[in-house]
Length: 525
View (spheres, rainbow, N blue to C red):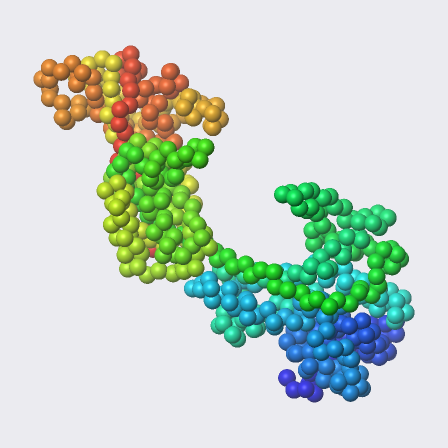
């Protein structure tokens, strides 16, 4: 864009701004508005905002370039167009938009420190809250100075050109692209402490929209109720007479520039799925602590996810499985389906051989005899619903070592196997062991099959009376069935139960293994 073209573009902006009461004098009145803004120590970028300039490329021009262009329209020497000192602080944007480029190095430093694999960024910017009231007060001032019949239109939100400038700079310097739905969310926050409370005069108007309350926390007074949305609504309702009586119009010039408060970077979560086997009866599924005390030394989730977290360079993780087994229950067979959600990962793309190497690494840890991983694969977030649905509809197969109050005879075995050869329903009241954390309701569950055999290590002609009281029960059940309660009856809260099917006084669970979770997982690509 040539200098002549740019001057014409700005000239058209002035006309399109339609400032004033006479349409034939929009250009002259617009120039007067610019002079007033410059006299109140506003930067040229904010002059463009008050003209509601639509071409964001104009905002990328430096203060010196804009000074030269505006001077041609104002018919002044370019050095006199803005007579304030070279490093002045804009009254409207307190330097945030005026010196937007000065934040780039610190933003780039954060990008380099975090070293995200993704280069597609969704950029959000937050500017000092004081800009809201300053823009409104300058509206009043301009309208008054220009003797307008109505209030001048609201200026363009400074956040839009600020974001445009930042986006262009980081693209050129660091090779990132801006996408509205980019997976890496960058939030650039600027602040200006001297004007942070300027909007509080809005609480003193006759019918205040802004109503705040203060709370003291950790020795500091915190203000509640002054959200940006509320401040905007309060400014819309503000009358010029109230503003003049409660605050300074135009806003007082500042000598301190806005500063970069923070650059927050958060990447969309990455998801990895697989199946795990647990050969130990001493591992909880996830860390098990009560009142800060760890009840199980190790957990399946830690064995698997700590390694994944390292390779994905994530902040944290969430472990989700299709159901769960107690710490003293083994998970055998093809394993239990699970997925790991990696929070804020710096790296998200891995080839199949890299995932295979991760799986091998996990299966070579000191915990390899207790926890094994298989079928590790990258998955989409939409795939995770399969795990949740599986909790409701999947079938699971168990093998249990059971003690029976009476010797396990062929008659008992035949009786249970006959009853369990066909699917049957059971009614389970909320188990006594979980009653404190689960709703007290009766759940109907289906046992698809149930069969009994004597333990393989017990001889048919054993003379040991105690050995005759053990049986191995294999069953396939609906998801969510309380197996322990089905075996011992839970003081009659589960009906029918294994003891009632066997026709014995009591039965108890000694050991339990999950041998199969019937769920296709991870999804086939």
